[in-house]
Structures are given as structure tokens and as C-alpha cells.
Length: 180
Image 1 (cartoon, one colour):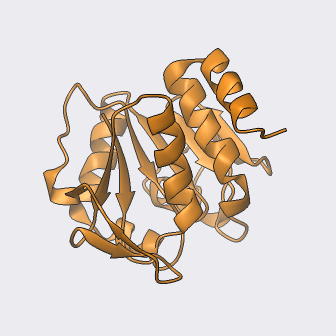
Image 2 (cartoon, rainbow, N blue to C red; image 1 turned 90 degrees about the vertical axis):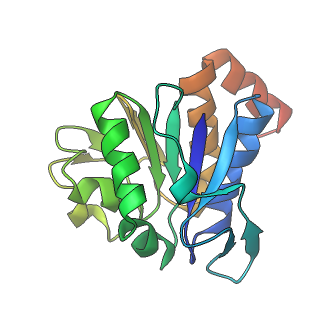
């Protein structure tokens, strides 16, 4: 199971590119809303989520959580006790945590990126405590995948496909999508 966690003020492409590509890869993905099932993006696009974040199951079936950026979406994720609980569960159980744009700051402030390579939206580097900060579009280090921002959303989503389904699957999908 993969959960994409959305809160009001999320960045659309950072949330939906991973949902789209992971579902194309035939992974089981649920969008979980913080504060309800109808969540609005930074530009007012409304999404009806599959479940509320209170319904996520933290169990051995969990493969990954995805934290999109956007403001105030990142802030709304960060103040959710259930989101923090999910992050701690994943970190303690060797489950992938993927975050993009401003969202790597959430796990950075928790000290989870210390000693790891990571990237984030410009200006949020100071929150990636102890991380080796790279200027790459996407960085994977162990069970942590970080992305720079909206412009790297497809590359970020392809990396999620790669870590869960293999490089061959991601490469095939990239060609199908005509990424380059």
C-alpha cells in the first residue's frame, strides 16, 4: 500500500504525478486527506481523496508514503499528528518516505535526513538538519526519496516507480510517457 498524504494548500502536480505513475505501475495507491476528504490545492483545485488520513493503516503492507509540497499544504501536513505518526512508523520500519518541494523540511526537522543526501525547494535547505544537500532534481538515499519541486514531479514519480518496481519498469514508463 502507498499513501499520498494531501492537506489543504498542496501542490497539484507534486501530488498527482506520483499517484498517476504509481497507479500506471499497478501499485495500490490511496490518496489520504488531512482534515477531510475534500482537499483544495494552492490554486483552488479540489480533490476528493480516497480516505481520510485518520484511516491509514500503519502495517507490514505499507510500502511508501508520499508527502507533496506546496504552501500551506506542507505546513498543514506537518501539524497533523497522524502524518507525523506515519512518518515515524515508516522511519522505524524501513518503509520508503518520499517528499518533494517544501515537504522534505518536515522529515528534515525530525532529524531523519541526518547523514543522508537530499534535495528540496530553494530556501528550505536550512530545515534538512544534518543532510548533505544536493541541487539535483531528485535524490534517493536509502528509504528516503526527495524532489526539488513542481518541475521535477515526473522525474520524482519515475524514481518512486523505480524504487518500488525496478529500473526497467521506470525506464519503460519513461519511454511510454515520452519523457525524453
